[in-house]
View: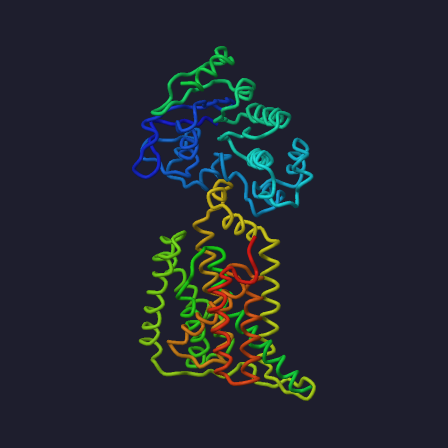
Length: 226
Length: 283
């Protein structure tokens, strides 16, 4: 389903990080937002998921305005997210983390075939795993949740290349299924592999957009260097 | 031999009664990080349920719905009006619930009067264990605490709601991201903790002298058990209640009641001072 941000503002307390930012992600589209650290990518993700309150503007999922919904309500309405940090329940086992997505045992078994590492560690607590493995677990949990929009905040950070490739395949499958995917990433090869559109973010807002045919390594790098 | 059996029974009773009394405090702290200073007043409120049932001429079992309604309604109101706004603010919630405890105590003085009351045990027989006759009611409460504690422990580990609670304790933001209504779950947890306190008061009522001020003693004894055992887990609660209850009945049997209180107080101070994490450390 289409996700539409219409002139949203927000940040931490009285400090606005974003002012009147607008963008939309169509159903079945993967939009990547790139930018240096500290430009407000994670803040944007939190404003969409409801972890941070909006100071202004409208967010629509399809035709439905979701601003009045708390974070849990947005998740149930179909906005699935994987935060950049704290993406797993550290004290719970790998299996319990996956169970909380609401998935059936068959679905859980299916996702662990993509990531054999998780299958080996089902009973281990998530907090005892490496940073990359926790990213994979958080990603797998997000993939299992039923949703029509997906917000991924740096899923590939610290993850080994073969697992990044599996992540890309799963993101592609979500696109095929008609999910609107917003990907906040620094990993250029992942962006090149999955993005339909790239938006560059700098302090103060979005600076330029790259359409599908304009996306190449140099163009994305220049967005990262602004 | 008989002395030993009697001592064991008394110690078991003390431990079970203490664990029952402290359960609500442990639940609310473990799940919500709120030190509910009005915990004792919910115990007190529950203890008045059988008093009311007797006054109204109702059968003893009527105390159960009276307790659930009286305590549940109070806890629900308190959560809506006060506690809801103070989650994740440990010191503020401590102050607020402390004020609440004074209000509830004074309220109870107005409604129930200041005099001490007693209620008859609904199960007034004696069960013969060897040569010893032990009050059947106490044995029934011990059995109930064991079964209930084990049931609760299993439920927390195995059930879907238990999993959601664990997720909320671990990472509230992510819990919301997987669709858990943390506000409602927190409210449920708080009301359940208060209901546990109320039910403890109701069950222990025949063995206590009931008055509006009885909550303070309940709070302090519960707090000691949690400090020694380790705050915020059922395992810690069981351990703490065993040490505190066992020590108190041991010293009381060997010396005097006063020695029992003194020993418990010294141990609690020692733990607060040297081992604030308690015996059972959370992961």
